[in-house]
Structures are given as C-alpha cells and as structure tokens.
Length: 109
Image (cartoon, rainbow, N blue to C red):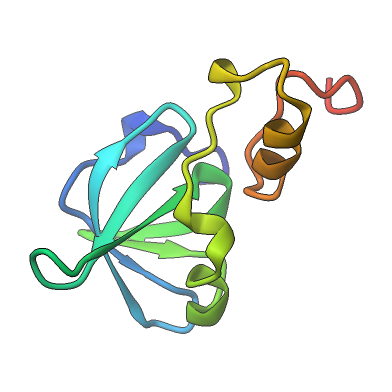
C-alpha cells in the first residue's frame, strides 16, 4: 500500500524502523500523522510520523521507511499542522521537513 491514511491505522500498533528497532506504540491518530510514544510512565517521549513515512503494516506492526537513527531525529518531535498556521511562513517551512503534503505549496499542486 502506498497511500496510507488514518483509516489504515489503529491505536496500539507497535511501530518499528526499517532496521527493525522498536520505536514505540501509536497513541494518537491525526489526519496527516500518527503519534508514537516510547518509554516508561512519566519519562516517555513522543514522535510524530507522517503517513508518507510508513513502508508497510504486518499484523500489529507498522514499519517505517527510515532507520532508527533517522526516526529519532528532532524534526519528528513536533506535530505538523498546516491548517493552524497557513500564514506563518517560518512554521510552514518547519512543517515541510516532516514530509507532509503541503496544501499551500503551489509547486505540489
């Protein structure tokens, strides 16, 4: 499957990197991304991965296209939200680093 969406994902799925490292579990599903949480209570970390970063699903496992080191990079710590700041050029530039389709970019249309 190449076009992943919220309908294809469910909370509780385990998320793995392309090199088979466990990254956490899906705790929230958004229109453009999923929130993955890892770690013990009170010390967890959240990452937000866009649907374009998903390679495949195997039963209760979601496999990303990136390695564990790429998946741990800082850019994934913040959820992209184009609809909340369409006029904020700096924030829109930041969001583009997440690989989320940008509805305000005329070159993508």
